[in-house]
Amino acid sequence: MGFLALSGVVVNDSLLLVSRFNDLRYETSHVKKAISLACRSRLRAVLLTSFTTFAGLIPILWETSRQAQMLIPAAVSLAYGIMFATVITLILIPVLLMIKEDIHELIARLKHTSPLASSSDQP
Image (cartoon, rainbow, N blue to C red; front, side, top):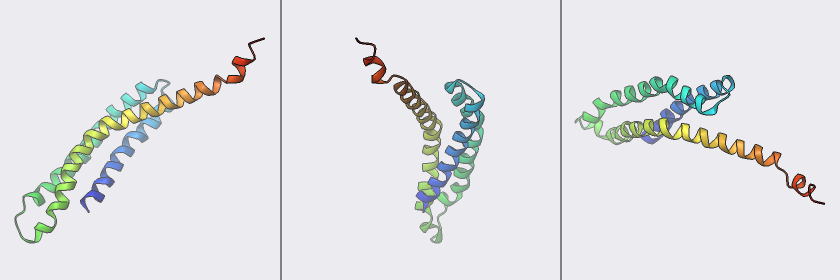
């Protein structure tokens, strides 16, 4: 259950970042600048989402009652998974966005360099 909840928070954080990047991509001609601006503008939202969720789980982690013993494993996986996923979101998502843009650029270059054009130059 904790893993499912964690995936929801990670998807939410990633969507915040990618959505802002897509908005900035149409406004800015430079991809790296759009990624940088998107990360800067969504850093606070991602950190607040992650840290408040972690802080909200701390009382469950410290609970010693018998009833809470069933919830502690889910709370541990969610709490520490969120801290790890926050770092991954802030590093991996921008890297993947840049890789995606590089692949699109490579495909566009390959389409414009057709093998028929180079063979027709020869006598």
